Image 1: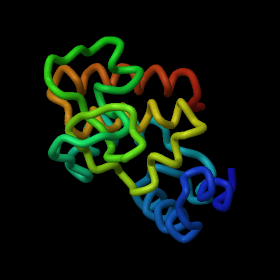
Image 2: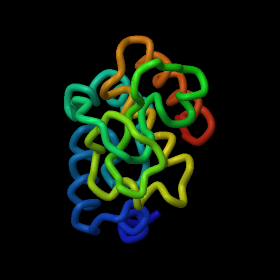
Image 3: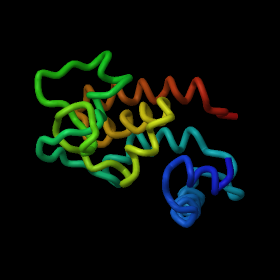
Length: 152
């Protein structure tokens, strides 16, 4: 997928993609040509670092799109008696504590990509979850890596 296609699928500008890819290259998350992801480094960053770089603090109750342990695949294994977590969206299907998403247009970007939605929800659990939720999220992330990633 080229930068233009990636920008369109993420509902961001090509400049945002370019800057992000440059940062990923500098961090060793993609190769020098920005064509291959260093899957093991990305996994380690998400599991151990995302909550420090992109912390999230649950906010007030609002209508929105379920995320973190309130969304699939984590809501199948983790149950909670408290309010769930959502990305604020007036067209959302659930009510819960708001989580600021990693970027503004996330609700539009996930509409046609269930795997992308699941991965962002997993990442949100890594950002805000307690130990049990983070461990479950790391297990789910590993399943996606094993299914899709080339780790050679």
